Image 1 (cartoon, one colour):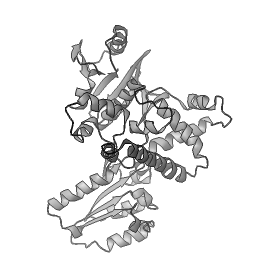
Image 2 (cartoon, one colour; image 1 turned 60 degrees about the vertical axis):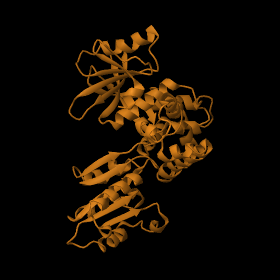
Image 3 (cartoon, rainbow, N blue to C red; image 1 turned 135 degrees about the vertical axis):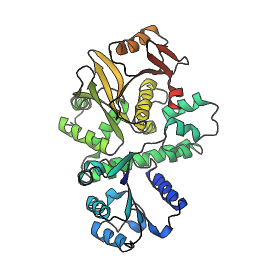
Image 4 (cartoon, rainbow, N blue to C red; image 1 turned 135 degrees about the horizontal axis):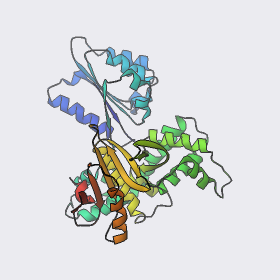
Length: 382
């Protein structure tokens, strides 16, 4: 099986590759049986032709031994699908690859390798990993407030211990690289400003229902530079393929079908919101909390949807691989009786016996008619 690691730039894919490599070395694999190529490194920039690269790799591979090939940022190779497929045909090659674009697995590669690869989608630090990166683990509430408002990219967490200004510069470089290199250059976009306007809008409306039509209407209001509905659709596709945004489709629980309008979008790292001018550090904490829960549900496995049951909204419906299901409501606090009743009433309409969770920052955990009310920090640290 080919190991395919995907995720946004700088989320730790290369580090995970190094960990796989070190595990092989610890298991007694000889170093000369491991070939490790990072295509963003200066000495490998000339290796863009897949045939030349294939010949160079095969020259080092002897038929009587097993070899372990690591290809980091493989999407930078022209016709990388042909390279990966050609290497895969060699029975004595174990293949590990990474890519910073979902195109890696929506391309011809996925068709060529049906059932022959394991996909690992990597995200920045979970809250549990974030806590482990700090010495002052006794003040979990303070760390969580910081987690809601700043970056969880591994290197950004390290830089934050030195100087927060360094974090801003670092995040700006990731943002610029994704928008310009991964999207604008790859898709020959002439007007990056339009793309940036769409990104800023979606960063501001994280966790809100949006559609290409209402995004276009909002951006075109009082603007002389119009953006068409079709351009918005195209940009949304580019942004999710680059992993800077994740789409949560809308699911009709009662009708058991996906709805084609009004999805929600979540940002891969809340710190990225800080480089758009409109973000306020302590603002919109409820939406940020929802963003954190969405990414954590992705980490824990299954397909994550936003739910609808008649006129009621369920924040998340998680479809597990074994056809099991889980329902989640997320609220900053439900100490207000009106808020509590609103969150609970959405669950009460659903008559199946799948688990239902109400996640809040309140300190009391409870079981309310089979609905588990949990402190979200405790849940994240499970």
